[in-house]
Length: 577
Image (cartoon, rainbow, N blue to C red; front, side, top):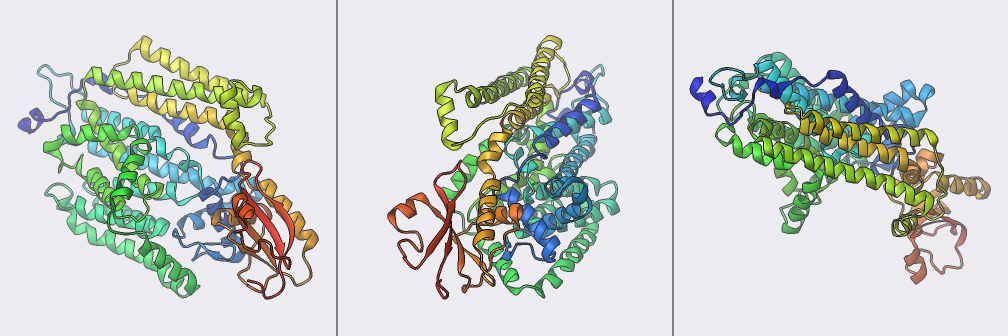
């Protein structure tokens, strides 16, 4: 063991593991997840689609096969629909459907945060992860060192830019990240508590599959197998892997077998979507994905590269390999996706957070100070930008920014909420106080840079929510358009007449269902048609039913924030398609 300890790249004294106050960490996490989660309209597209599947499950009984009204929504599994619908059933009468549907986000966030923290804590206590033993002592004890790494991993998770909006949406993305985080925890737990680790591993793999099908399940299944390959602590627990596989298979089949005996069209659509998700790698798609990852995974990806390099002779050690195996398998899936999206990028976040934390004890003090300065400059600039945009909306200065915002918020009359304004000022003051503390006190704890990044991102998000949420609701909500359409339908619909759609996207269909309960039939004999088109298509006559004198236009509208998107309610003769 002494020779192993001399070769470690980690260098740290006990002062570097000074405990971060638990209330500060918990408070930051709560502010991060609660801000922007409630008291707003559903955003298009994923947010409102998730809510629509929950409401459809409650009202139509489509628990096994998620749907948006009559539309089969086969892009995800049923997990988010189940949990959200149960939350609405239990808490909807008290809190309202919109608020209740977002309560599961607290569960997904808690699963992610706890799994990342405890998984990193467990591996951080292991002998191979410990920093170099100092000649006269003073190195941190294993528990304090593991706690410091765990705090850093959680803070880096909170600081990851790309997940910020998704953690506040009723979509599959926060759920699939939570299940993958539980897989990571299970791989670290199985070495010392094999039964607990194997059972949670099976549940987590099944949860990933039930949340997003093969795109959610395949990388964690492959990552688990790869994690057990090298000789070491995990390999010695290989005989527990069949139990995990059995639990996962039983839970998946408990859904799949009855689901296949229901709506055959949904099942076929689900299979088609999962198979069509994959394709042979293409240079353009892979290059675009790597470009997008540079901002999505900021600031963890540079630290991951540092960790892999610094621990290169320890890659198969138990504190590096489980996270690295999950990262590599998720990255490989990214290259074999026909159209890489945020649902794949988010599968890289958890392993990146843990690996990035492992890089911190290997960095020189000057490098860490540079990261601190970068976090201060970056998030101070974003905070100033949030305030500047708010001023531009209300007072029209600076004129250039005001004009740019006005193009996307035509007709918007900005209100002033003094409570929101005071809270935004308080958040700004706390951020300034944190900066002063950092450069006046000059703490030696290794989490000092990560607390700045996480707090800066949380402060920026808080300012955007408090100052910009009314603007975002106006720009992204279909509440007004849905109310206008429902009123026109109520006035014009005839006895026995039904409503179908033409070119209506899933997000728009979900919005009309959520706000007004409008459901669109697939019966081609329906004589009321809601058409989604564009101003350009109407102008050049390429929109369906254009110029047809037999078709009566009953209503034309849309969101004033997007004048290019047009909805038309038409009455067509019987038999028109």
